[in-house]
Length: 222
Image 1 (cartoon, helix red, strand yellow):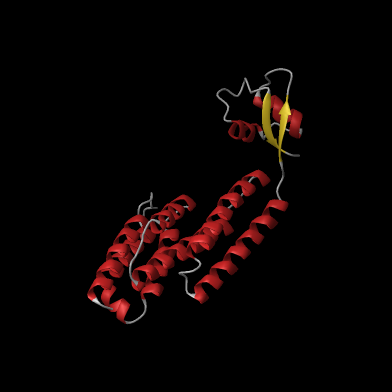
Image 2: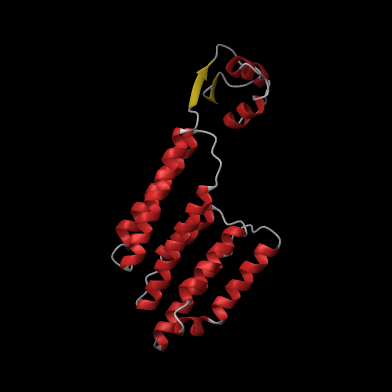
């Protein structure tokens, strides 16, 4: 790797890891491990590049970020940062593409264990991930290595299958219209036959005062 290629790749990597650790991390060992791995990645960048282990070490940083509390939003923000990069050399392009692929992998891992409340919640996230998938296909397919692109397509397909299966198992969100403003406890009894779900109705409808619910409310189907 010549000097200019090394400089470009390292500068991109610095911006990448800065974004990777820019989220409200959980205190404890996971955060310490993440910052240690990021420091090692930058400090030993030339050696890792010469030994062809940059990808392995970078993926480890992404995995540690997820363990430390990285969210879908933080991974999407990182991917957007990498999309804004315009590397002129092969190593820089490789780093950018790896970061885009790894951020998508971590998002998929987060979604795989996420607990959803309704079909609408899944559908909204599925739409967002569909946009991300198409964005990568349209703008990065030509610069991805063949194996990496095939891996991305496979992961994307599995993610959409998982979300579709999850959506089918969840209740729908239904809109109710009432003649007067009922208290949340009364509405819980009317809709579900029990008062224990009043807090759920309050959260779903962002109620100012639980004694005066809106006449039009959203609730999970029975």
